[in-house]
Length: 163
Image (cartoon, rainbow, N blue to C red; front, side):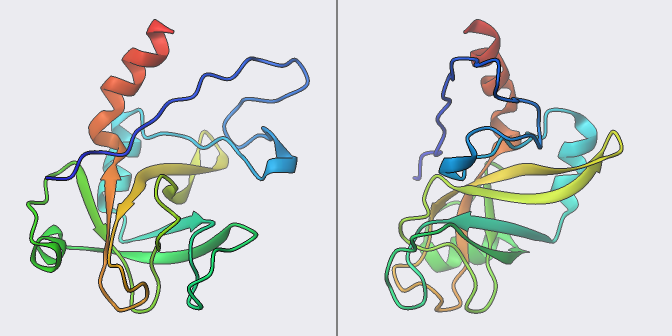
């Protein structure tokens, strides 16, 4: 059984750094904040999304790691497809996604599966998944498995409040 990929980092607040969603965090490191599906509306929107974006510095079609973050669009697949491909039980805490010759690859683990949405009148990126695992032959048409962030929102909120 696969275990979820989750980590929370506590950053020391710096007065000249904007921490709001869709703001700039550490631009020289290509790190940006992203919104989480913390309310029911965002969770329902994410649950019905058919296409996501995934980014990472992992292997490309040439099997080399990228020097810059790469991005691609992936389509939601039925969890039963991932269950058949990988022989593991897929729960609601998993997302099965991928498109022909487009998916995350090794080296992308821990990266975001996200989508753009308008929230409070502002275009924002919402993270719905975390790259977990997939085929060892990237781009072979097999979907990837992602951790469903919405399944862990209560845990995330509890940790953030406690710290």
